[in-house]
Image 1 (tube, rainbow, N blue to C red):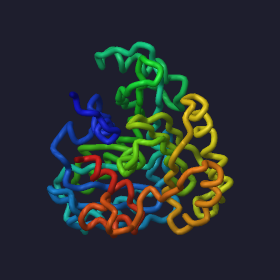
Image 2: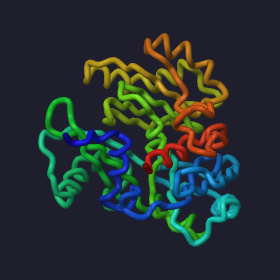
Image 3: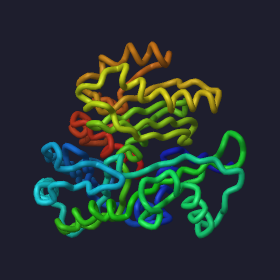
Length: 325
């Protein structure tokens, strides 16, 4: 009997087509992962067995990184480079390949249904580019694209496509190259963090980073919906009702389309205020509401030496390591 393919294993296949999402099957596993967000840069050195050998977090001042799918992201190149250099020096990263985790707004992700889908990538990629060209705020010629096919509830195929503007990706690749490293693997932070999910039940993940909100719905190992939006205020000021209003359209679409209720909600990015959101969200969704990453040392997802990563809210970093194996 063939082995079931998990969502985590599907994640590993994303990016074998072109450069932007080169996951670990495409090259030897990078020993360093670097996550860049609007307010910090983190660097982790991993052992061959997946434990944390060293890590560093460097804070960024507001406005140094402005995550965008379209425009220049690195507003203060010298300041960001200096912070990256300090983080890399702390983990002794030099002349190495790294996994590069980018802010979610940089990458557009679409889940589309096809009655028939080409088996060959040289036929599939032009079809996806044609289908998506009106959904993007930039020219299709200036993009890198990858995709993964997953089973559909209605037959045919559901295809998860990741696409980004090449010049934006090159900004970040050039940044790591400026400190003597090479971005051997590129992903978005939330794609990496989804490897933290433990259950096959319909789960809604809401991940907040400053004004960016990423909402994803996963069921039985399949990505059923994905949406990245801008909040009307920073995460520190967002109320449970405002967050619910932003999440609700994707949740309603999923429940109407699949005729299945959401059975679990995981929140990330509101660590210090998590308790405020539990009761309102449990009341709305009628299910358990949990943090995406818990800081309990007994949590089986906390890799050896990773408790400090969890305490620092680095769920993308831990998810990246979990998705490796």
